[in-house]
Image 1 (tube, rainbow, N blue to C red):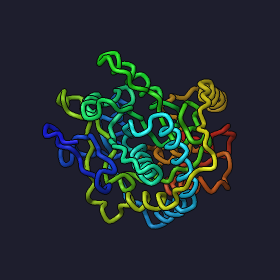
Image 2: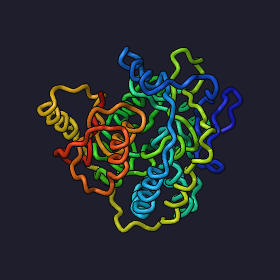
Image 3: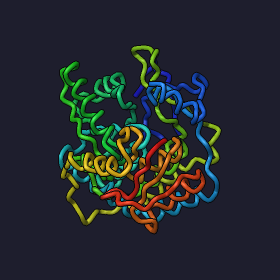
Length: 356
């Protein structure tokens, strides 16, 4: 998409694999320490109005990430195929992939690659920002719709945790449709749906998606998205490019390892059953055992626990099975950060992390 009014961030994804509709805020915003960010949030600020510094990972953590990628490559390729085949039967070539940065960005790239591999279809892929309690980037949506007026927009993320983005997307798209007289579908498409909230998922199991284990170095060196309170009304949400980590960039390595395992899935059915009572039942159990907890401080699933251990300050991690190889990353990170680990009945989640 050519748009001269925006200074877009340019990731390290190859070609048009992923077009980030994000303003480049590199050198325009100062990252905070994790402690400073936590203090800002406690004072009532939104998590997306600031950004914390990203740490590099030691060799042991990188080896765990690589091992998880290679172990799950065929399985992830299978999930990507299930989702893409479902969407192709429904929309054919008349769709655009709109991933939610950042967790959705690698999945959107994998789906774009699968469509080329399986159907010879070059599906446009954009990655945009959505922020809890602030909504989706409507300026980015406007521009995508202008560029592709007859296409179906498919919103993509990596996994569901407690469903905050699922509900945020639904609310934001409903508001957008009302204000624009549009008819966008608010269904969130994910590979893993342990929250049981997605109508279009490959599995309901809580499985480690390896891109949850790293930060910008698995997503084109692009930071988490930033929503500036005083941003120009026409501007997109923003991000910064972390060029200092270019020697640790596994963005395209990850895509290539999964893409090499593409195949025609044996299972053709998506996991579409929704149970909106499941997550509340998990909260109920936690409240009985730990007292009433702020929902924003409870991180459900391997993916959300991974992110919490990377960029938040956890108080405790609850684990169903300490021998589950999918937990190798979160267990190692908890050990490094001195986070207590407790064996606990996490229901259908494999782990839960509670923040301080």
